Length: 125
Ligand code: FES
Image (cartoon, rainbow, N blue to C red; front, side, top):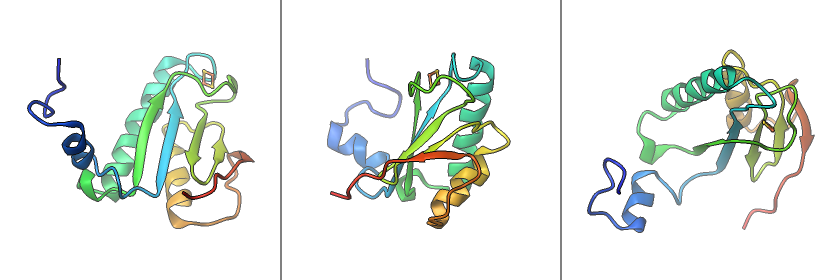
């Protein structure tokens, strides 16, 4: 069954709806249940969606793609997050911290953010 808004579209058209092809960052947020409670994870996820919408009101113009994941294998001090291709890993990305983490990444500031605990940048393809 197709998701609302996807009916009658092929994958290429759906990808275009989401702006795939123009992103410079893919941000993955773990919503628990081991690094944080599901409630804390969901609150962070909702804050992330709001922040990205604030930065990019039209999804097709967004430069940051967001994905909710079930586990990034750190399983403590969450919500855990990682973004690629920068490969910046963050702890404690709670609802009240999401905006500053996204602003830090979006600014291109290479200095580690206080919540950043590891880097593993990927080569840009
Ligand atoms: S449950 Fe979040 S990193 Fe494992």
